[in-house]
Amino acid sequence: MTAEGLIGFDNEKYLNVQTAAILERVSRFNQRLYLEFGGKILYDYHAARVIPGFDPKVKMRLLQKLKDKINVSVAHRYGSKPGQFGYPK
Image (cartoon, rainbow, N blue to C red; front, side):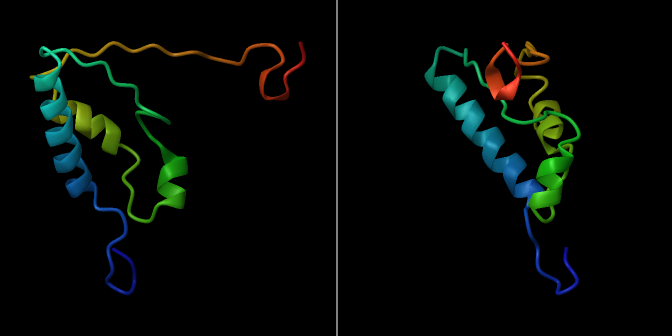
């Protein structure tokens, strides 16, 4: 909540809407759906800085809310390919 009493990002609404949308899509794809999360899953301080009210842990809270209904695989790539993002080839 801001000083003016206005709410920025509504984390609870995000959790409810995303949970319902994910479960609905899972039911349409033979109980199997692969999702990719953009940004950081845990401690997304950049999003918290630029989106008023954003909880830096909201994506992890979403996974926790779905924990009895999903399996999670994590793939993480560290660094960049040569020549990408200004890195030398």
